[in-house]
Length: 379
Image (cartoon, rainbow, N blue to C red; front, side, top):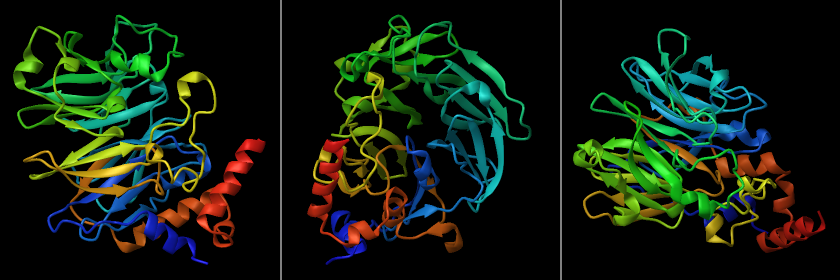
């Protein structure tokens, strides 16, 4: 009987890395609390090997994942912690825990960026943006959307020509406190907002994420549709709202695209799994909490895509399902952390966190899947 290591190596075969590929830091969100310690992965760009980062001191028992990643001026990193106790965690340049900044007023931290020696953090549930100076812990609210009774799902701040932009899942004129609309109905309300004058720059996006400066303009993922759009300076300056549904996407992918990184010649896109049930429906929101239970259905796989920037072609796809279903952010790393900071065989570590790995060793993968299906039917 094959052991789980060899099974996972077959199922999640890593393609050969490109010689110029960067190392990557990848965050995962929406994890069960007992698995959330495995929220941060490192990819070795030379070998495509993956590791979980130890990051002692980063995660607490009640946390459920890591959202945004930002590079700090001292060469370290800032992480948005998804938790009932929302906070930003700072790592040093060795990816070791440095300190934590509580931000309870944010309710739900998603994306963050560094600008002018401070962190710009989106408070997703309260429709606010905060500035956190890196030399103190004093948070200052710098923007709040006039809509006070709606759910916009703000995320992904971007500074472009010294102006702050954010994206939101729902158009401010249509948002309401009712979150029961099916995903495919609410998906068409996504916008980009210029926070200087609350102007809607673009609409027609499907649950947008990963707004960032790109070239002389910007790039954004229309996550639910799997589309990636680019915007020119004229698009961002225009007084006329752009409807991106009328524009051909720059890239089209089958997954829920969230998390973009790039170097001179390559784009890296995070493709999260499609949810088995929507968390907007008021029912169980997670996938089956097991990396083996949905291996046969590609809709429920997560992937890391490597795209050639010159021609837009996909050069490689790395299946990430055994590491996590929900990729949130991707950040290039100039070098790998010390080996003492890395946990090898991350797929096995995550499987062990769900159940005793001996269960997998005692039966074939098909038998295991049948057993899990029967267990679900009896629940």
